[in-house]
Length: 285
Image (cartoon, rainbow, N blue to C red; front, top):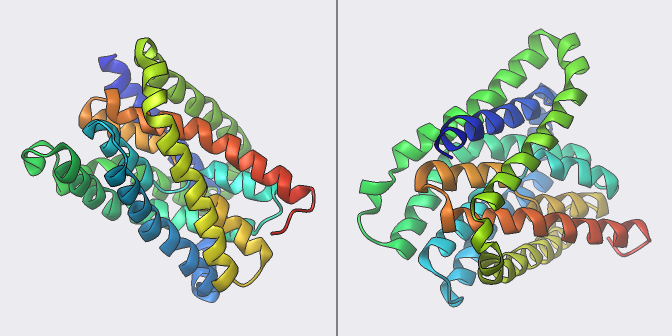
């Protein structure tokens, strides 16, 4: 698994983030300035509330330290491009969803290192800075997330025709790569997957449901409309599982630490699809 962990996984994540960058334009970032209220509500829910809720859950839950750390890693991850697609299916504000994904994917180069190092010190203990530092984590996240997104943005800006032609293909490839990464994480722990799912499945399900409900309630009070509530609740419920698996694997060798990201990645699709069916059938948004 060494070559898979050290080469295939980072390359797969880098391509997925490059594909995300291909779909972005300057308008996606300008929209944040023009309509800041909805973005602030979504960003605060994802960057602040999600890690806080995750920390409270794993502090109260009886979990092995590695699983607790893994839950915090998935909570620190930004939303993925899938949230944009599912927001469209739910008839939510796709532009807001894209803006949240884009900006938070860039901001996570700062937020992930601090959350990961803090969680490591709280739950695993020992010399956290000796095993994983803020600087080391930031460099890793910058290399496999920020750089590919910026490259995608540059290609979209200076080779627009190619970007538009390749974007749909890149999206399909990204979906396949995500499935491969997720399957690889599950296969690596295939002998223990039932036990691990029993340990991490419920806490990740609760995290997912609590965050979608809280984000919806906060957006209902502070966001500008129903479409924005849909976008914010989905964005806070679907995290970038590939990035979480990569961080857990590259920094901690996978194992138990990667399990919550794998279980969450499976659960979030089921809950999001149920939510979308409810909305499409006329449920209150």
